[in-house]
Image (cartoon, rainbow, N blue to C red; front, side, top):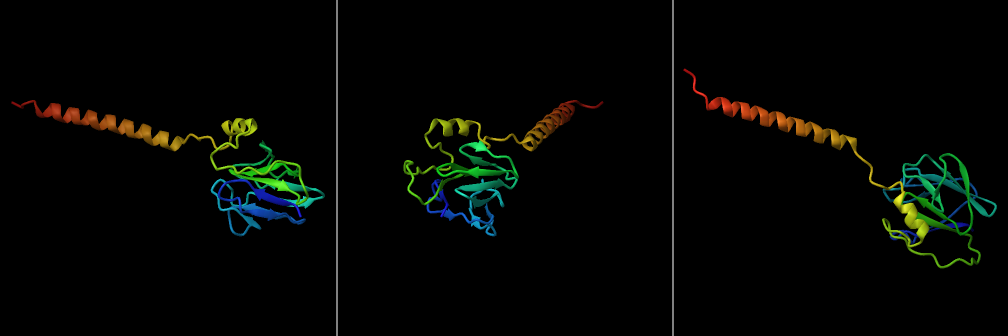
Length: 167
């Protein structure tokens, strides 16, 4: 039976047998295949078998769904072929048919580390997990600086007025 074998450290004991009917994968327990990892969306994608392929459909996930490091379009049914990798957020799987395959033994990929191949290293640099700017923090910082300058100016005015004597 077709299966998705998890390659990510901490999840390597996870093997999902993919059914012919649609099955959801996501962070919440109501998914057919729950994955408790923050980079995986609540309802990340759906998978099902079609012939020798697994069909993958991204459900508008936050961090995207990737086949061999190429992001698939949301809501588009995309085939995953035997031996290819499927990445949901930072969790990576390989499609195995259960038949004898000629590929190398599956590597274990730690979350936050590259798997070692040049493709993975390049994809990591342009990953959806790069640090995002937070405009709210910048606004709070700017308001804090302005308030600090106003307070210092008021203190200078107040203390400079104390030194003067009135006739």
